[in-house]
Image (cartoon, rainbow over all chains, first blue to last red; front, side, top):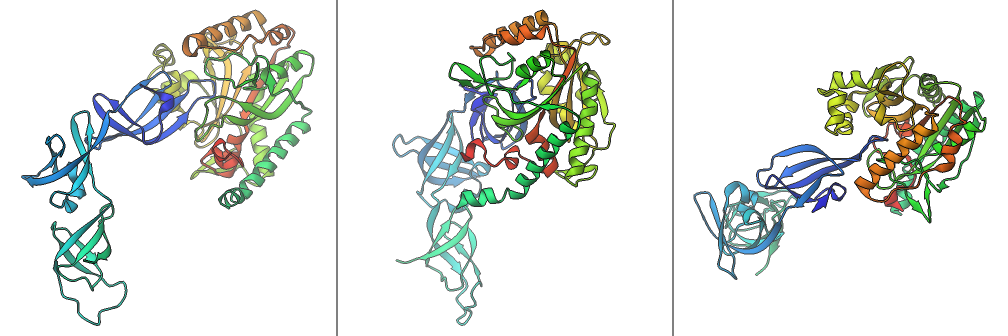
Amino acid sequence: MYTASDLRKGLRIKIDNDPYIVTEFNFVKPGKGQALYRCKLKNMVNGSQFERTFRSVDIFEPADLQEKKMQYLYHEEGKYCFMDNQSYEQVFLAEDQVGDARHFLLDNIEVEILFFEDRPLGISLPNFIDVVVTKAEPWAKGDSVSGNTKPVTVQTGYQLQVPPFIEEGEKIRIDTRSGEYLTRVKG
Amino acid sequence: MDEDWRLAGKARTLKVRASMIRSIRRFFEDRDFLECETPLRIPAPAPETHIDAVASGDWFLQTSPELCMKRLLAAGYPKLFQICKCFRAGERGDFHLPEFTMLEWYRAGTDYYALMEDCESLMTHVAGELGLGDTVRWQGRRICLSPPWERMTVRDAFARYAGISVDEALQDDCFDQTMVCRIEPHLGMERPVFLYEYPAELGALARVSAVTPGVAERFELYAAGVELANAFSELTDAAEQRRRFEKAILDRRIRKGPATPLPERFLDALSGMPPSAGIALGVDRLAMILTDRAAIGDVVAFTPESL
């Protein structure tokens, strides 16, 4: 159990059977009065936020959150299927739970799935992935002005801006946190 | 390097703070107050339910200089002030430091209304000497300092802002929460305000009003929603004071375990203390208001985190 004095930014607690993360925290106290802990909390399941002031006598259950390595299998009808390679257990995440990560789900890629108790909540990808460019306009030679970019499509269907010298069939590295091009990958 | 840069960035604020403290001293010296120094390390702080003292060997660091200053009052010093460090365990936030600077002043032969006038004169004097005129800007607000400042009873403040009465709040043990969340954000937004006549049980060292039943002669000064000072018409009934301290000690034992001992010598002296009024004002918070800083850590060179 946590007490109010354990509260800090980033702490994950359970309220009414949902996991919440403390996004803002401040200690307040009338000079002669009780210590109070003013928090902004974000529901980790549906993203809703609210502000609440706790007293030092309040106690909290920690949110039982775990990350598990799982392999991406396939998606159909807005559902994404992942499998635990040890137990062969399969879980499904909805489109909004996967979020932008769906642009980078390569076949069989290993990801971390965040679980609250037995419920899968979300996904975290490796920071960098290498993907093949499947569609690109040819490089108009001479167009070497630095800063110029062109749009390409990669094997997952994701579109992004890359330098003009990237050709169809080449492999590039993407930062999955920003969704941006990093470098060309040889070989 | 980062540390030099951090400290250098505070130069302007620290200069204003130093001028402010010089100006406070002049204010009290001009009015014949005696500046006193009482020990920071004492055997027994005033027992308070919600203030935790820091132990120092077998003794404690003071949570306020109140007890020793009142012993001086009892010994016949009629006008006293002190600017000193106070220590309160576990208090750290945008408006709290576990070691902070307090200004306390006491006047014999008067009650807390005289201190309201002192507050008005002091803040206008200091703001004037700092060249701020009669208006300070704090976090995008303009606070006019020219007196008189509004006086609002706690009862009225609850009726106006809280949606529940003082009695209901006390019954549900949510007085402080209501004060912080619903009332304080409205207090002193255009001009400082005195919130006064606290419920008798919330004025541990204050005299009970002879005029309004059930309330203590206690006020708090607010500016821009920030609590700046707490004042009492001082309780001089030693037997009553002992009962209140014993109750606070019992409260602490129930809520938090260990408590501090009774300040016996203070209780001995109290019966000889003339009717008086006393006030404690947070110097760091006043510096925040006068330098337009949002965090208390901005107006001191070192916070606990930077040590």
